[in-house]
Image (cartoon, rainbow, N blue to C red; front, side):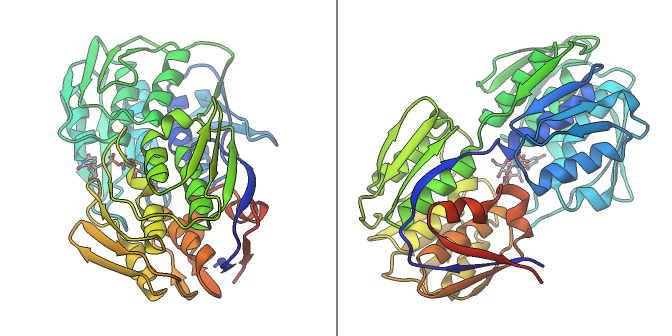
Length: 421
Ligand code: EPU
């Protein structure tokens, strides 16, 4: 199993290009199942979750071609199986995203139940209950969701909770349903909007994009020709590199990024003392050699502060000036990184969904274990400022969601290398 070795102490400085968003690329790839015509997707990040999605579509008989620039062409006309098997779903919960499109287009889907994961129980009851309201016949048996429908029927869906992949699954199901579907309390995450724009480019009729009420007028088929769609930049990857510069008192210029999708994160970094300038597609952060100030953060659905940036800010607070309180409201168990940071000397107290971080002068390098994607990233950030060497184990989590992280950090002057075995 690969590991990362980081020697802390370098002040990061330089320029980086941000990759396409993982959490937009995954639903967009699933949505290609809805198209009668081949479609081409660009700005795909180079990630393990993308490989898993390609495997998932490939084992259904779908033809995928990928070029050296990571443009993927998908032709779903050769599909032979409507199944997402356990061995793929267990490594990537986002596999649940094939449920809506398979059911809508082919009237049948067999998707392994994703179950729990490191950051909480993460049920999919809202996906299932809403599809039943749209007329699907669903049974859960031997760990699989078996769904059937002749043609789904549009209806009004009021979601109990804001769910990102839930909204995405229902959007994809509704585009081919009979009549109008209205999704209330829909997730407004930019990745949901990116999927909706892609579906519209293929011929869907979705309005209310970027709001929490999505209206979808069902169509018989999606058969727009010669579609090429570019995925939006990854706001969480961008946020992670901004924190990398902030925590090391450094400077970074990010290119190919959407600053307008990072308002809550940029506000908190400014509060932490960062000097930040932005343009249409770039962000520059400069700490002018100063230590960050601790900030209070409360995670919530977009446009509030993202749960996917919580662990990175916990790392920053652990070496910041003062005390910062982090409150996690989206997932019930997303503080697995705290225990590892404590092993590096961090002064963090956990009280149910709150972490009270008292900034200390210096963390100490230690062997640490990555438990989920963002937790792993936060341990790398902690390693960048720790005294001595930090060895981050189980980095397959990082490879699921960060495109060439050690190359990108090295480009900024970090001392980081990957070892195998
Ligand atoms: N929930 C339910 N029932 C459902 C669906 C969700 O109770 O049927 C609950 C969840 O347990 C959670 C809350 O609703 O407490 C929000 O979960 P959501 O469904 O929004 O999460 P997700 O769609 O499974 C996506 C991202 C996550 C990100 C969350 C929140 C993808 C592939 N994943 O997950 O990304 O943290 O939204 O923004 O889009 C990551 O990239 O590291 C990551 C975990």
